[in-house]
Image: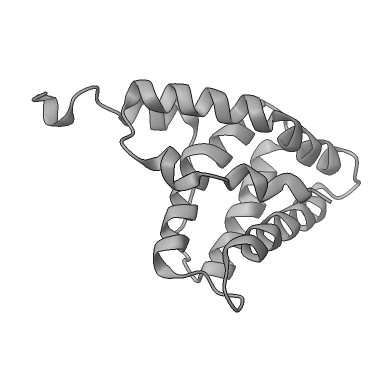
Length: 145
């Protein structure tokens, strides 16, 4: 179930390089377009269950397990991979889920965040919306170039 969840991370490092406002907009739109189906499947799974929190936890577990199966060695992510995957999720995965504007999106984001915190031993890990991230970009580095 949700086997494609690890596939959405393909090329994650290149998507994080040299991000400015315009490139983020383009990369985010492409990412959401390519992965909308998997995100909708995830929210539909939660919607179809009596206990949304439990269902979101199941999705989060499967999602995280798929990512770890793809990128971890001996069940652990290296420091740089963990950092890059964490950033990728903040920049692309969480904002995409929230963009769906589904009532279960936030429950699902919370569950994925909590599972990621547990597996990466990072209790302060969190997520934000596309609008907040997009607003934080500057067109020019330090306003100079």
